[in-house]
Image (cartoon, rainbow, N blue to C red; front, side, top):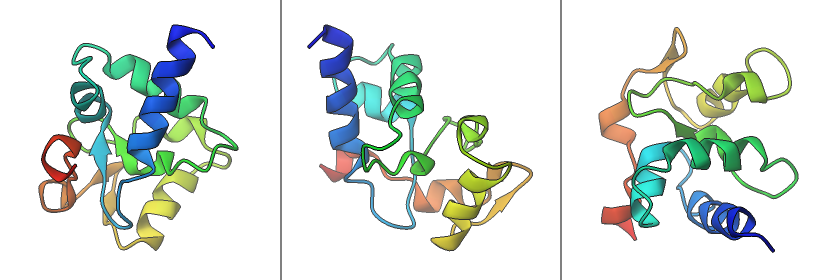
Length: 108
């Protein structure tokens, strides 16, 4: 297992803990894992999470924008998954981002 594979698995472990109806950011996961400058690597991990039982739709950028939506099957699947959990999304941006933000550094 390479270093990136190990990092990806650690990212998936954190992402699996994001509660239903809540979201976090790539940077918050990276910071929690002690790799604060690795938000992009967290994004790559989410992009490679297909088939790994990871709620990748709950991970967005630091402004609450669905930047990873083009990696989901279908045009609006990421938004639809979030909305099915009660998350309000308009124009690819989560509207109540601060209220539903889940920070692993605080929650775990």
